[in-house]
Every structure is written in structure tokens, then in C-alpha cells.
Amino acid sequence: MSFARRIHSQARQPVVVRAAGVEVERWEHEALLEHVAHVVTQPPAQATAAVAIGSINLDHFHHFGDGRIELTNDPDSTGVDWIMLADGAPVAGRAARVSGMDWPRLTGADLLPEILGLCQEQGAVVGFLGGTPATHDRLRVLLPQRYPGLPPAHFWAPERETVDSRQGSEDLAAQIAAAGVDVLNVALGKPRQEMWIQNYGEATQAKVLMAFGASADFLAGNSSRAPQWLQRTGLEWAYRLLCEPRRLARRYLVHGPPALLRWMKAHPVQ
Figure (cartoon, rainbow, N blue to C red):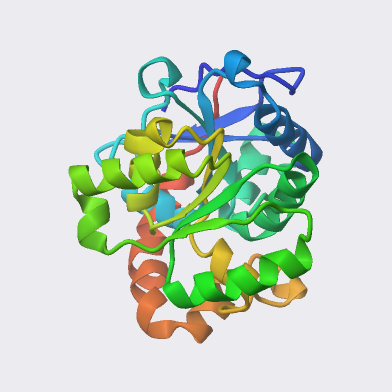
């Protein structure tokens, strides 16, 4: 990925660490939220590329990078400007060691509630693409309670065949644009959600798109996060594996070790 980005609210270029064709940016928590708020409040006439926020964990290295799916960052051609954050503890830890800097771990599960709060403050319209109808039903009840000033959210739970179809995805993007969505959470699983954002994100006319996977499930209470002490010690993956062994065993036990070896070659980008 080439990160020749246009930074609006952050005063300097972010520090970047790279391995196996994947780059991870260092963002302070508050700077990221300020950047999102700035983009959301931009008048249409001043808007540039949509901001797309991705979460880098070891599963990302299994799908993307050298010899795998290429996720390019070319806002001029795609209309989407990626910000790739350290989500997994091994990713943040290695980035800190090779850069010599503290590296904040910014997860989708933590950021989504805060970005919804920003949307409430700014009156921005939120949309959720992907996930289950049951999760959406819970969010329809929860969001007005937790964010009473948030405009009514919009939800799409398409079948996989629809998402994998060009015509189906173009129709979805047109529906999202017609609904006036400013901030869109895309939960289609890796690598589908990132590629959908890259291919169709501009057509949605959303200002911010988030490839945050299961974050909506955590918000809805359908999935539980690990206790804080497990998160701090980098063992959240073990907790999730115990909770969902059939779904996650292959990701963590088969795909995880080779992905970690790829990331261990990380080095700062000059």
C-alpha cells in the first residue's frame, strides 16, 4: 500500500511501519477522532476522498500484502483514502519495538461507539452494511437509547451473493447514497469488507467508511469482549477462541503463526 495521503487535521505525517506489503499507521486516539470529525463536517463542495478506516490484525496479513490481495491506496483513482490502524496486540507491539515509539492500539470495537458519539454531536447519518438482521434489530433499539441525538440509522444485511455481485453491490451503494449516509460501518468479514469499500465506497457518497468487522456485534451485545486484563496482556484472541472455537480456530491456530512471521519483518518506512 502506498500512503501518500492528504492529512487534514493531523499536523504531521503519521509514522508508518511496513511488512510484507502492508503498512500500519501510528495515530494518537484523539488525533484520529479529530480527523474523523473534520471529515464528517466538511461541506460537500470541499470534500475530497472519503476516509476509509481499516483494522490491522494478524488475520489481515493472511489476506493482504505481497503475493496476496493488493489493497492499494490511490484516492485520486478510487475516491477512497485508507487509514490503517494497529488493531491486534502483536501488530501494535511489534510496531512499537521497531519504531522506538509507543504505538496506540486502536480497535474497531473501541472506536465505533466513540465515532457514533461524534455523529450524534454533528447530526451525521450512520449506516450499517453487513452483519445479521438480529444484530440490526438490537441496534435499532439500542442506538436511540445510547445516542438520543443521533439521526435514525440505516441497515443493510445483504446475502453474500449480492455482495459478491457487481450489480448487487452497485445497487447497495446507490441505496446507501440515496439514504444520505455520512458514516458507514462495513462488516462483511476480511477480505470482503475492505475490497467492497475500495471498489464501491466512493459510490456510497459516505464521508467515512469503517471496515470494523465484528464491532457492531460487540456494540449490540451479541458478542462479548475479553476482560480488560486479557486485552492489556495481548490475550484477547485466546478469549475469543474459547468463545467461538469452531469459527476462529483456523484463523488463530492455522493462519495466525505464518501471518505473525510475516509481520515480524516489519520496519519503519522512511
